[in-house]
Image (tube, rainbow over all chains, first blue to last red; front, side, top):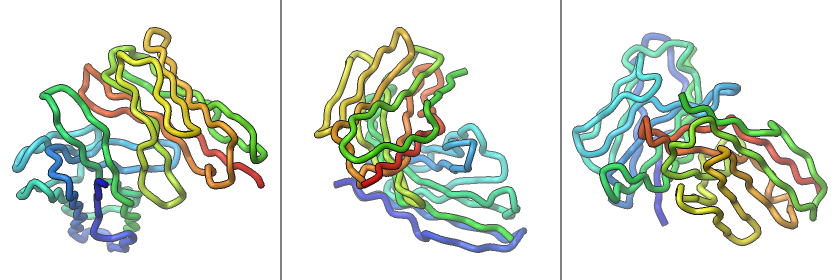
Length: 116
Length: 112
């Protein structure tokens, strides 16, 4: 079974703090994704990565950055946390069979972040 | 721009009932469509994935259909149980953007 783990289930931070959210998958997947989920807005893609050291902006990258130094690990960084970044953050991973052939995305349990 | 809509937003049914959840999308240029389940405060669990060339997929009591030309998918749950209570999300993988686009979800409550 694919396992995607996220470093924290709940996190409380202060405005202006630098925040790191970590995601690790154990199935040697090439693709990894970061989403945020908000009531009424659904899931929105922040950033994704197709390979080590590669990153692509999603739909709402502003205020976020990412790092992928190892294939199994994808980190989301909030450089200076703000209250409007309070949200549920979900990480996902998938295989890349072909360049444009998408496979099932497997999700982690989520990190609920509160920025005060 | 691809938009995914799920109706109804919430549904409450008695145990044992068969039910249908609906998903519609505006752009038929998709690679596949996926149904997920999300329990409160948890991540998403993939239930079924239908490739664009397929019409339906089945897993146990779940059956998902896809009509790409009309931009519709349904998730059929047979003999519902209280353990089926969750939010069900539909998502399409857009050929144009290369991204997974989610609907808002249908929250299902199955009463004993």
